[in-house]
Amino acid sequence: QPAAVQNEAARQRAALKAAIAQLTTDLGRLENLLDAYLQGRTTPDALDEAKLLAQQLATVGQALELTAACEVLQLCVVDIGRLPSSLPLAATENMTAAEAASLARLVHNVAALSLSMPLMHNAPQSMTYPGKFDAETVAAAPESASMTAEKMVQPASQQPDEIDAELREVFLLEANEVLGSIRSALAASRATPQDMAPVVVLRRGFHTLKGSGRM
Image (tube, rainbow, N blue to C red):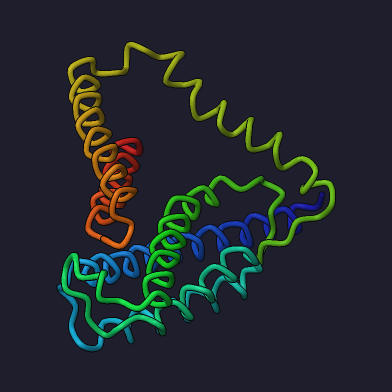
């Protein structure tokens, strides 16, 4: 391919990755607003802010042709609009069935987006702005994803001398503690599905593991 075409493709891909990075950052803001709501720490206009942010994220997702993410975000907008303006901690038993269902779905969808959005940074090299794939790229996507995962894992296994054993032990101990709290919170959530407090613990646990894994 001509150099100009390659340069344009590289520029478009860089723009796409930058847009996804901003989406990830703004999604973190949405998560923080939701966490505060679940803990009863919201201001009167917090849900309005969360709804507006979700709408903006959905618009960006649509522009990038991230169809699945856009649809989930649009559903988040609807669910946020159905929630009561404030929620004292562990007071979800006072919610209507529709409000409880909307809150449960909202928590699930935001968590799913939080975990999946960063993976889009590892999109195939042939991905072009604003996110279109041709037929060959779609067919090769599973293989590309596997190759990407292998590339991410191989350096650590091939260069064991670079791993600080003491630091690794600290991370493993922390991971075991977090996994223990996740198991406890999961059991509590299943026992009392109307209580969103254990969900906050679950979300924080996943974020801790994700952050430690990146380090």
